[in-house]
Image: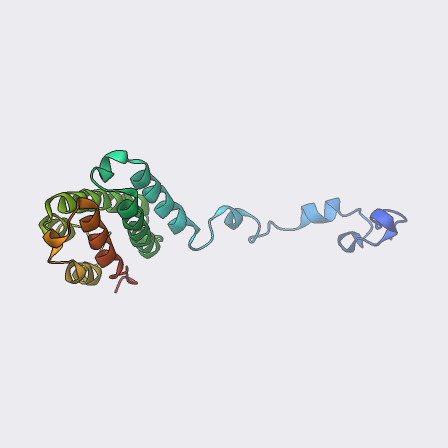
Length: 183
């Protein structure tokens, strides 16, 4: 071993330089590491789904036109429920090569659903929500999720005195039917 070349700061031996080359040449002769090579740039499982869902939720949250008749008290929980729904969708479809297009379709369906909740709150009739749910693509709601949400919708919506109270009741009912695991 060459004197000094195998020693690091403080005179401690460098394990990668035991052959006396100073370590640099030894590292350059090693084959490329698969763990730290190409695969290090790939996202970890779940990271892509989180990013897809985050972008979709940000688009929904930034669009003030969607929340026409909805107050912060009703829009916040609705956006939270839709966030869970979009995240479940993104996780189900994360490995799909068309995941971004699927999330675009799911976001568009979520927009229609928000508008339907707003119309239902203004009119006191759940028909716009039922219609939006019936036409929601399976990317947003699986058939089982759709059935749970439809069953949870209040039928006595007109009994609530204000649009805000009706919207809160709809959102509470929808939140009681949480997104499933896609089965």
